Length: 427
Image (cartoon, rainbow, N blue to C red):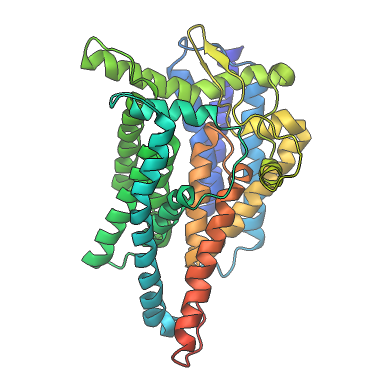
């Protein structure tokens, strides 16, 4: 029965993907990305059959209903507002001096991020304590997990990592084909990767690559197959390196082959397919683990950081086994939606999310820099939906991004033009 349900799910998602692509003709269309990610995941489950516990039928229905709901929400907006999708939003007469002011501020922001690196290193070094060189990043990760539920306060040094991410995305968007802009983007991404390495967080290393890839693709309104393959390979290599240094540094491997095989199994299980399999237990018995990721978590954390006495659930969920020998605590986007709100709540949330992202997608295709960069972030969230929820739980980051982009694309050009008596409209 389980195999039959998996095959039905794969067939249904394949048909849904074909209809969505025929309707939109675009691999960057949100329902196409989401459905493709979950179809790939189901195929991965099929190919690894026997390696993990069987998924119960309820979970398959959740995955299928969730994809259909998301697609319906997006398709309705797409069909109802089909016209004027490629209209210009930027006043081309203002292009030259807008870019000059924006590029100048981006260069300054990049310098700030670079200056912040040694300060960030010192702060993380204090967390690592007396770790040896080989276990330095491993100890940082362990300490970060231990401190995850402590009350956070505003830290300029910690926010340098956020700044580096936003600068990297903006640099990628502002690339104009010149060597100077290309090298600035390379440096910005390298700085961001350094922050991710120092903080020992694999997810930040992977997401910045996804951000840059989608920014590049959305700006050009096209997904290049070679670039896509290169991006996937880079993400895998980065993730392998992260697991080896952040998670498994104390382990000894008999050979390089044994090490690579172990890392590959860990990536497939603990990070990709394992959560999808383990969620099956939650779908059958929602109360088997406590809810730790309510969609309003950002507001709880903000209230607590302001000194208000509110209960904030633990940041990390309890572990469940996805095979007799391995477990995980990442249960996909549905851990937030289905577990907390049931069938009706999940459908409503997925409908809303699909509609909202298609609205943003349409704005991004019209070329607005803020829309393009925000949609690149949302595309990353869609890709990583098999791992966890990246939309409501990312509100803290998105709020900081909104402030940064408002300053960069609204205030900076306005100040620059006011000094020259020029009226600016930069969408």
